Length: 266
Image (cartoon, rainbow, N blue to C red):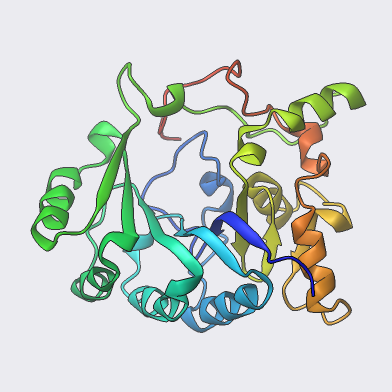
């Protein structure tokens, strides 16, 4: 029997529809605009069950968009995820504070108690529901964290411009060094969208856009009947061993990478 497969962050994307249109969005919302719809709840539930057939434990089970609270049906996903509450430390939701969660969201999320954290990206004037959201969470005793992305004191110094997909012409040694020092690799962030699982959100979504063709070792299709679950687990286990195809066009997430003010609208 193989060693348990334990992740740090398992991030599931239930929607790429958003209330904002940020120029440097790391999930490429402007490029998806008008071409995607919300992922059906039934499909997300099936993906959750499938990924937990492969992954034994994750520190964070995270849902990120798009803007989650645009949807009034995701409480069903949070309810279903509760069935796996002994397989993750915390449920993490990401919001831009433009839409308040619905009553059913609140009802289900309160069941998680301290095993929940809502991470609010504060984009200043664009996060126009921030005060109301904070008041709601305080009233309902829902744990939250605010990350400031406006003014001169921006979280992580702001955003990077990773919106280009051409090969940057780096040498193999440079790519290996970049991968070794990549913040996403160090944080062991894994992302799932519509049955496709990768160790890099950029690679996953650039693939979805048709801008990158990943190597076979860069991804797992949860519904690929030609591979056993154990074979899929081994691919996941080694996602971060070597640079990915997407590394060749990545500006990198190093401390020295140029940062820009977040949430500039297109």
